[in-house]
Image (cartoon, rainbow, N blue to C red; front, side):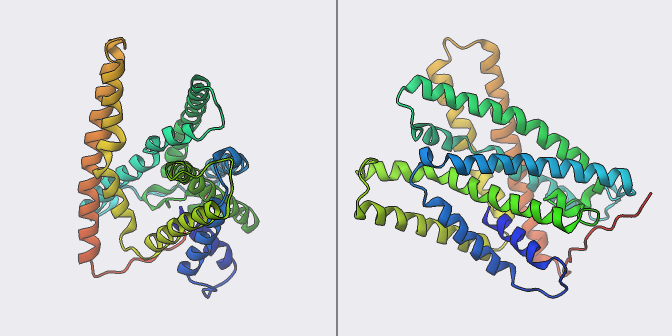
Length: 327
């Protein structure tokens, strides 16, 4: 998230410039400082404005990606660069496998949901669980089709040259002002996600150490400031200076899949399996087989292969912006 936000800041600064104003690492540190400032919000009950801003930003980014790809398909010649046109098929296969780790990471946030639910300012346990399930159902109901549409349109328009941020691929036909607005939304979205992911952990850590929510003493404030600062500093250092960050994050997600996917479902089956319908239990086993085993193995193999190719490669790849060739 810090890397994505830092890249967005760097892109805004470089618009209309041939020379680099400030390196990406510096912008990464600036983004890390911004994430730290957002994380100083005491708990999730007071962080709802951040969630609202992040939700609006997410909707805007999806709309931008769909519109950008659609305009490119309408005005420009679609890319003929597909997987079959590459000589280095092995590299393409490993890259595709590595992407499985990104998918697992994107949808593997459920371990923090109990912490977030416990941090909600709703006293009744059943009502808190009901509100949390409603939010999760709405989230997945909107996210899954949005991701599918963006992926299909992005590949149709740009082929394998598509950037991880689809809008970067369409930059040639999008006005600078619109791109700046998009990058601002990216910055706020990533910062709000970072805050939401970690606020629950900060809250539970404070409660475990005996700091009351009602009492805001100098000692408790100093503790919260210190824990948030250490987390932000460590996350920024790892994001900026750790080599092969994408591959390593994919490997980490692949190795942690038993904790993220398999064990929670097995625990649910053990508690409710006797009364649950048979089709649901079968669906759980299929889910574990696909996400907990198959995609994890593909992500691990792909990341190791991708790193090996990058380490042994003597060529340096440069990012060339896509140029719209009018139809």
